[in-house]
Image (cartoon, rainbow over all chains, first blue to last red; front, side, top):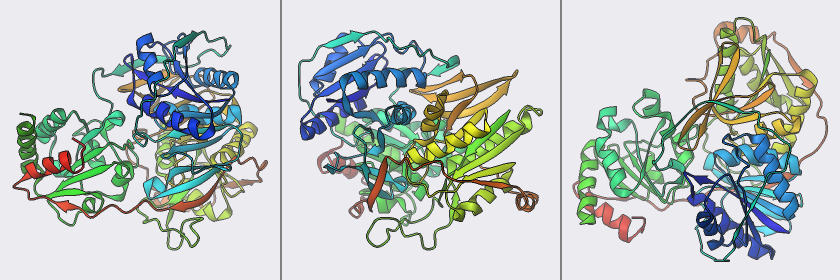
Length: 321
Length: 249
């Protein structure tokens, strides 16, 4: 019996979410009186993999040859299902992100295991197994009973605080012995390296229509860089082509939950809030004091975004000195 | 070649969600029901592909698992341009059972491209598309932001960490689509609305009860504290509050 965590790395380093997943699994293992196995597919250094033990994984399995350079959902499902069966996993935990959304549903069918996706707390009870999950795009939370003996959870990002719980576990490197061959062929790839992933960022600085034009983003980017933040935008901004689609946060864009979301010149339509309402703190800067964003914000400034942002830049610079 | 677009029937995304008495469901009074936004974009792209395929794509079918009360939403999809529709006559129980029912339909009818939205705006499960592919044992590509035909090959663009990539997979496959797949959802024309009246919605009975999960209750998110306003002439105070009160800097 164990809890199996599917971890992910990015440019050779484990993503913050991987440590959140292991911390979550570790807390759940304590409730269930079991242990945590962390699984990593593809190459990650031994030193890097040991970090999974720091957050409570008592077993670390690395299928080094598993990925073969392409994310093929059938192959990844086969690898994870195989490890889950060998480990006798009763709970599988993935992130509710690109990979988790692609793999968890396949695993659910493969293992006939009930899926709770977008979970943001530890289970409310173990018997029956009830999880707390996002519903109605953040306008409600559901208490979901999972009736199967094996359960799969995808954890909402930034919903669980990392907690050290060192085990000293050493990674075991294993081979993929399954027969599934990738059917996905990559024709073209464009990746910007060395950039913070929006979904992984603790602070996000986001601009809306109130920024007026693409040329006005300079101070916003400077503010983001001073704060170590990622940049994001509202839908009209990406539709206008002022910013790339990858930055669009909202119901149909990215769903994020940073510690601090700074909404600049964003009115806060329901569809936008659906993507950011789980942020710990929302700060709004808008020239309309009746803008709905202020109902969701803890701090606000009523003023012209183009005038306020440069002043914030100065204030942060002064703070750093 | 045939495309199947799976659609979900959800409350209009501007709806202020209220819970019904007992919190076991939402209060549906006054709710406008619409095609799930990602499914609508997916249908739009499917129709564009068919029109550009020079006859290679023969039809675009929509499939829905739900009761007769969701037929107005299915009619809307037909009015937008789908050729025909299948409805599995069941009340959606969980993602697993919906995916099972839809995969039975696909097994019987045979489709080459199956398109599903990345999530429904009500249950936020992000599950049905991936589950269908595993029920059928076929490839799935998720977080898809583009599908196109080039020299007879289907090219799929998907989001990956830090960027995107274009991939090929053999048909049949499931594409789980997200933002970017189509610019704007297509709007039904008057002619489309008229012709939708005579298009067929085939009704099939559910193949079994296979649910694995059940929502026992809902709760509303805790209301946030009232916004504290900072003088626009003194944004340094905001930074100070974020640092010392919220402790996020």
